[in-house]
Length: 319
Image (cartoon, rainbow, N blue to C red; front, side, top):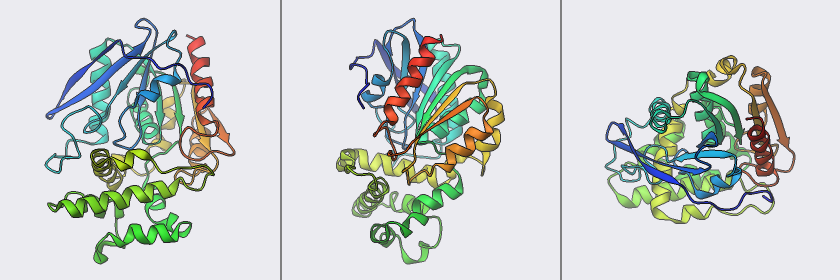
């Protein structure tokens, strides 16, 4: 990305008690009196890295980042096998966002979300449209059963060698079922070696999904045992339950976004999230504009990030 803003540090941060034994880490950056914006990171379980701050003009925006339940600097850590994930669901995350908004005294804000963060952003906006001014999403997903089957089973037709290794970790009797659920079970196993093997295999499969774009490299975060375990426990937990969305819920609920301007930025070569997903969403949401980047895959590379920044700059100028 050529248009990133300079690195900045937060002017405020803290831990917010959101209930159920969870404390959510948050930070605010940019202009304390600027246009409020909320970052919704992907994964689930990736955490809100510092790079997210650089999409926003710090002289214009008051940017809020937070680590969703169980990941990053939020506590307890979902990577700890003793952590109870039953209170880590999409409705809990939507509730956390509202508690954070009220805690910070923000009336409404722009949403920026990528990958899982796009689904969470849509879910939040459809439940609280009066609290959302604009929406910018990239690598768009809607967390349906079909999408998760595509990600964990159908893409094996394109990556047969990698998928065979991915499937080989799952017990034979569970290979025809819900693969994220099978992995979630392995990642809760009392045997650390079983958990580690499952986490490594899941991350290797995730890397395979972005390898179709020239210049792609393995995600270095997967080399970190703590991140690898937190990420895989959360992503399998969420995918096993289709993000706690009803099948087709986010597409069917797009009418609730009427009047909210949106920009959807997506790579045409994104195998993990085929381009028909944002295309259908844009057709159902009249106030959204779809920007398809021909040479891009999943993530912010090959021009996606630049288009995201252009959209944020435009919304920043409009007030």
